[in-house]
Image (cartoon, rainbow, N blue to C red; front, side, top):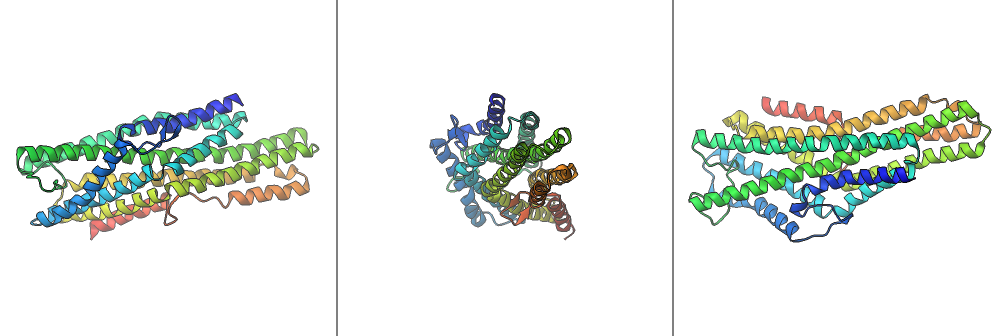
Length: 382
């Protein structure tokens, strides 16, 4: 029991590790083990995002000479709207995200008493801890690379460093002070957005990886039941009932976990897919029409977001397929006849599992990822 509790605590620390990265923005989910509350940092971050969201209106009326400027404004607004969805996800949706995480940790406490189940979650916790800093570095390199590209474009075209032509209203951005203020504001907002994107997606990835462990736990418990029947037979009905009840309970807990995840992350996933598709369409159009170099990393960023979510969801469906195979392949015919009916219900239940989606509109799987690639190719051809 103590080892299961320790593993559950390590699982919680995985999410705390993600959460600490955006602690300075006030968008963290937890604070001292409890759901965080809104503070001054939260208000500051939200104000920056709201200002960035509405700045494009000023720029649409003040900068309309070039089509590239229009593309800049549209891209900036799409990114701002996506950031707003993620802010809602991280701030307003805190309690729902915390519910998913706590429920996943409770699953480990309850079923991690089984050494095989504990070993499964130890493996996935190790994977999360290993890949979190690597993925964070990818996001940091992505942000720095984008700044460098913008600087190079500004250098060779004698244009402004600001890549989206987004300027603070009522400020002379051509003056040294105004230009410096705009650059500082852009660097702050882009850093916050980049870290927010990383955190929101890493929370989704980590919870889905915990779902991998839950599906494997169901399969292991079924295999343990088969091993018990082969070794001891089917005489001890009480023990068989206990093992069957444990399998059914893990299925119920997993179903509830996936419902909580869909409730907490559904809008986030929908926003990522929808706004990334818009970004891809706008940037590909701009690149092909005007050679809009700055749009290339934006398009890559949109593809990266969709690909990462769909890959994680696709791997979950692979785990579900593996679960169905393992549950069907055990020697459940050694069960008493009445218990065989119960086991067939367990088999049927595994066939009803569905992967994560974006508000039930976009299934996060390999098919969606391929469809997005085709969409990007069609945009280029048009």
